[in-house]
Length: 201
Image (cartoon, rainbow, N blue to C red; front, side, top):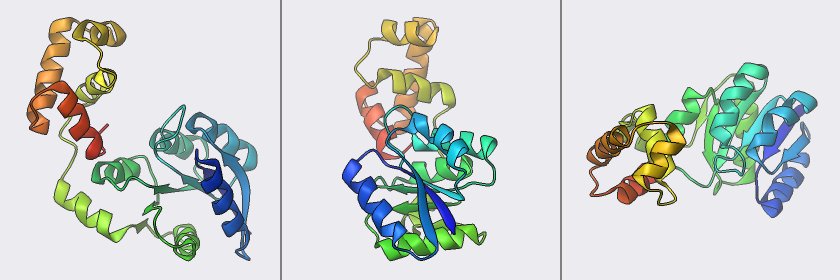
């Protein structure tokens, strides 16, 4: 029996997925969580064979949880199942050790088949997204540039960002300027938007 952990913040979607997967003769959903910061603890408790993780979850992203899951429970495979098919997300998911990446609009039979393929040792990636990721190239932003843009998401001032990240205001301005240049945008809010659309944040 394949033991599955589901991490999905929308209750109706999570419940529907659990019901549909439990109908598969060889699968059983052993844990369900609605927040990213509960994934690792639930997995250590339930010991699933595979974790189906959404990316944008309250508390913590599924991508961050995937990386920790690989360290804490290496036997558990990770399959990212998300609404947001962004090339940068795919690249980050692979770096975090995910074995697959699917977009939610596919049929449930495809998901069940993907689970079996991942457990057989295959990598399963949405074909359209794989092509887009290859053409998009790597994330041009450094970790610090990503940190500064993430801190700027809520419209924070340079002084606010400097305080949050323990950097000087001049350093923050330099990182913002570099990020704006690399994203080909005119200001920090456009840079945040572009970085999010590409899945770089």
